[in-house]
Amino acid sequence: MKKMKMCRVMLAVCFLCFSFLSSGVYTQAQSVYTSGSEYQAASTTKKLKFKKKVKKLQAGSSYKFKVNKKNAKWYVSNKSIATINKKTGKLKAKKCGTVKITCKVKKEKVTCKVKITPIAVIGIDPGHQVRGDYGKEPNGPGSGVLKTKVAGGTCGVVTKKPEYQLTLEVGLKLKAELENRGYQVVMTRTTNDVNISNKQRAEALNKCNIAIRLHADGSSSSAASGASGLYPSAGNPYIGHLSPDCGHVTRLLLEHYCAKTGIRNRGLSLRDDLTGTNWSTVPTALIEMGFMTNPGDDTYMSNAANQNTMVCGLADGVDAIYGRK
Ligand SMILES: [Zn+2]
Picture (spheres, helix red, strand yellow):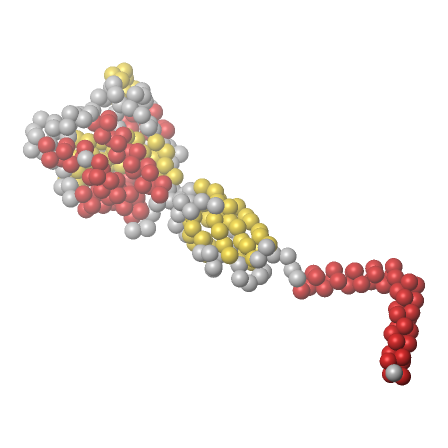
């Protein structure tokens, strides 16, 4: 009983002491306590933030993001543009565009935007158009030689498909394939019913890194078959200084195209009479994909599945040009 009483007394004293102490110095003590807790929060419970981040990344490259906390989970807004390892934060850039990266740790999250830049800008000119334009234009800068603005092109001996249709089908597929591989693509046309001269086509692609001109051959002999690449000679007065680069680009495109498709490689030809080549200020290649006047080539090139193979070969050539193959 005595012990119980003593305890009660002591409790009462303690309570009084506590009330007294806290009443007199409450404000001050409280403010000291608060600032102390803030100081502690800053040093032990940090806010989630990036330790390592990047704003731009070239397609085809990788980057590992880091935050100041463990057990982070990573997400990306568009998986067709870039993928991210959920646990490690390693981002793989696939094709051009902008993605939002999100990092979550428990209930906290931080985000940032990353722009995926192209490996290179590739120009594609699907040769010809529905109606040729038989007006004239100089076949090179300052040239007195006038040539037809844009010719009608050839036609499939079996399929009856016009060349302008074939080049557009392949051109649009090539655009999609190259974009998937991390390139940016500029097209001279995306429909058949246009009127763009060869000079205008060259000029439209002069801001690209390289220009690819897609054509198909025609011959009076149905036996002629295979693909070839045309590029300017070193003696070309307009683009001769780029002849070695044009030759390199044309050779790689043609080699990979023929290797993939099995179409016969007829080799490279030097041509200085082509308006679309002469007005170019960047390495340019004209690929004759096969002979539309040859039944085998014509049937092959018109088939949608074969066109995917053709495009794959040409895209392999572009990858080879940029040291990615
Ligand atoms: Zn043509």
